[in-house]
Length: 251
Image 1 (cartoon, helix red, strand yellow):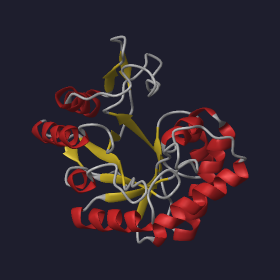
Image 2: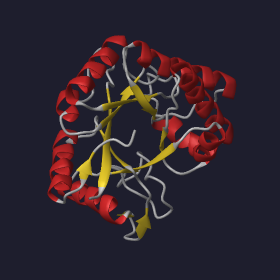
Image 3: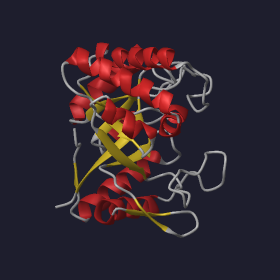
Image 4: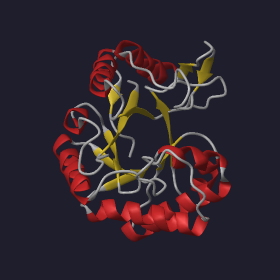
């Protein structure tokens, strides 16, 4: 039987207001990447997300970002590696202090993409994850896409888990379509659900030009704050279940 993880970015409150229907999302996913203060979220939101995860049997991961609440972490910032390591470590630690039984770390937004191409930023993020791993006494995997961060994780002795995106367009290069361009976000629950099964069973996605890309993914991502996120998540889970694909975390 094929198995796959289904993760979503949750706990992303802004000024105390939720940006997604977290309760509904927790009912269908297997892993939650929880905002820990850099781009969104606060102590109350983290504790609520941790409690919901425990009730739903969902694994919790930290979702650190550039410290950029105004831009929701979607702007790349120039931060020295030592300071970036400190900022990321502080965010992960905040989620642990909120009671999380932490299982993995996934960078958010601009930081997610920067660490695929910037070796210094990748080493800083991997170093922060390594710091927290040492404090916890267990090794935390990093979740993401191919790039510099894979090498940095390996050098730090950390496992790396690859993911594919269900609600984002892919360029022929394998990169995601920038959010500022047409085709960046997918909205059709049926199409998104079919992509989920295709990735789980074949390891491929169709790019914007129609070409077929090979992807190695143990986890599938849906953005909790995307329009229609709950409908897409439910469609994905139903389609995976119907195809006999077991949804469970790899951590």
